[in-house]
Image (cartoon, rainbow, N blue to C red; front, side, top):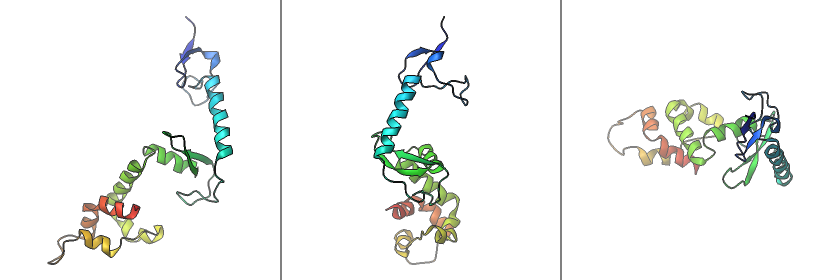
Length: 163
């Protein structure tokens, strides 16, 4: 029996000598064969040639990145922009879509209500009186605290902010 494994890209069984080394892999070899890895690198170079110019700071976190990465839509392969590596990884971990990022926003609003007190000024966010009045019960005594209000209406408020 020949020693080999299946490439995760082309799904072909190949000899171990057809896989480049990879120090973080359990077997010390890349999961992509040499030809697939070469094609991936060539494609990456083509993308970088057609990419928009790098901004001065990351569009997500507004920090100067240590490492820039080219963010793209995995479904369409359309280039979105340059991001810092941590922001690109974070977006990917959230599903690489608006729904995942939105769920994370709702989570943060519910888990850390003080975001809308002191931290809103640092982030440049605010909840307009018109947004609050849409969801607050009109007339009569106040039936809920600000914290309760935010927890109960986090999704609707997040939608208002994201628009």
